[in-house]
Amino acid sequence: MSLAPGAGGAGAGAGGADAGAGMERQAREIRLHGLVKSFNGPHGPIEAVAGVELEIAVGETVALLGPNGAGKSTTIDMLLGLLEPDAGGVSVFGRSPSDAVAAGAVGAMLQTGSLIRDLTVRELISMMAALYPEPLAVDEVLELTGTSEFAAQRTQKLSGGQTQRVRAAVALVSNPELLVLDEPTVALDVEGRNAFWRVMREFAARGKTILFATHYLEEADAYADRAVLIAHGRIVADGPTNEIKAMVGSRTIRATLPGADLDALAALPGVGGVERRGEAVVLTCSDSDDAIRALLAAYPHARDIEINAAGLEQAFLALTGDDADGSPGAPAGAAPGAASTAGRSA
Ligand SMILES: Nc1ncnc2c1ncn2[C@@H]1O[C@H](COP(=O)(O)OP(=O)(O)OP(=O)(O)O)[C@@H](O)[C@H]1O
Ligand SMILES: [Mg+2]
Image 1 (cartoon, rainbow, N blue to C red):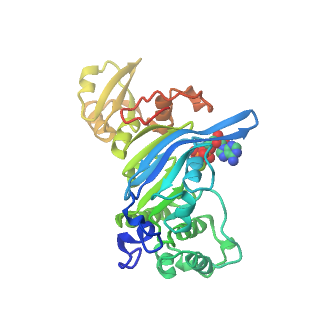
Image 2: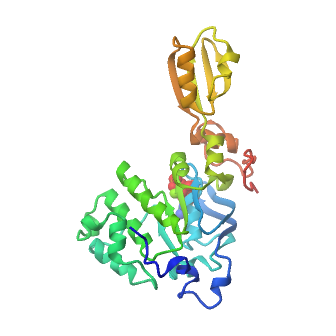
Image 3: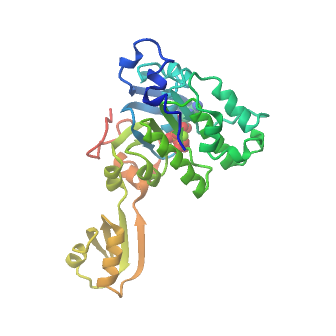
């Protein structure tokens, strides 16, 4: 399976034949600068995006991670030119978002929106292909996205997961340089997810750029080079996924272990810190797999064992200094820039 005939190569898309003269010398990058967007809410304005600065290099796969209402979709909508920012600007391969999208340089899977009805899947993809200067072959897109089995089905009769695959096909058909995916795997089962990310990996391997929004640290960790954490419309951390994961993804092991020596526990492999809570101990782990094995080997009588992921929600709370429960609407400036890789918390 390949994404495109070799002829187009890395030169297709933004700098290709569709672009105006001189485009190929421009920096082919994605820049979001000082983005601000507010909406009118029932209790006054909601600052959905409050000063996002983000630059993405060609070939990067970036995960935009954040809880519900963080501002991911609003940021993405501005990146795609679907929403006009109140302040700041977006440049996509040196062009405005709408120019880049019209040229087929950007493909998108949005969180909402339905497929055009009364067309078969094949008709829809063919119609979309006809809109762009250098589309992929329709059969190739159908095969790649696992939609060929139901290519003759009308779009309104598809299951949720099938619909999601067709949306992926729509995003890919222009053979874009940049793919923007807003929670793309939400309706997919495990197999569907794996298949989806296989396609995306192949896409990325061609030097293309991917930005995807997700709630899941695991998804970011598995598929992105870089994770950008967003909360309350601000970037609170930005760095290589392994660093972000180490920062936010720690686990704790809790076990009832009366009289255990804390120093000995702290010396176990995979254990970073130890705390006593009554009869129980809580181990903060750098590697919970190693830690649990070592714990059980050294203390076979340990009982009531629980392993907990610190989880993204807790990480966000720590990073943003919010109240427990992640109550929304923290005041502007809530982000203390806690992470070493923290972005700009205006
Ligand atoms: N059209 C709109 N009108 C009013 N408020 C909006 C609108 N769009 C978004 N918001 C508000 O802006 C904030 C950010 O929303 P956004 O959709 O960007 O979050 P998100 O990070 O994509 O969340 P989710 O993970 O739930 O998709 C939320 O408080 C939301 O209620
Ligand atoms: Mg969203």
